[in-house]
Length: 230
Image (cartoon, rainbow, N blue to C red; front, side):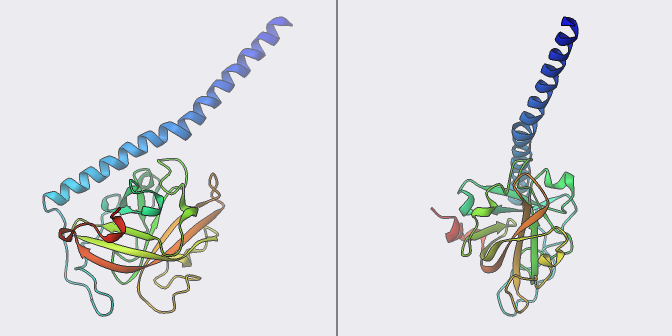
């Protein structure tokens, strides 16, 4: 009997240890790995930009809000921009890659393929993990109307201003990333930004959304935009 109790106790201890190690892996180690991967993506982008690796195609239609030349098509799984959100901290910056697949979102934020390109007419839409893989959007609920979301593609700074959100919806509500997103409050086409993440913090039954409009652009040679100056 004692040997059975001892065996059960040892089994419980082993299971408990495995559970603790798994939690540590999910909460800590995946974050450490993801931070390193995201930093590497940013370093590679900045190195590419320093070598003049940014390509553009024909100029976009600049009627209305001014826009820079249209960038070349984004490559699936490849980083093409860096995002900064001062509300989440002045050291917060994440790479933006093309696509929203599992492997892509482990490296940073993901651009919904088929939505507008950065700074162009339509709805530039981006997804990010709330938890795990670096927790890029952990503090997403802190975002408020008026907050700046700044991006750069190596040649231009794009400053968007949040107009609405966080707005809670279900994963099947794909109309939130339409060119004229449903429930955004926008009534006519423009140059918009949509950010999405999971809700609740450790679940995925719903989504949190914020919408923003392109407020201003400036060349990188002009220095950082006002939103990034302390």
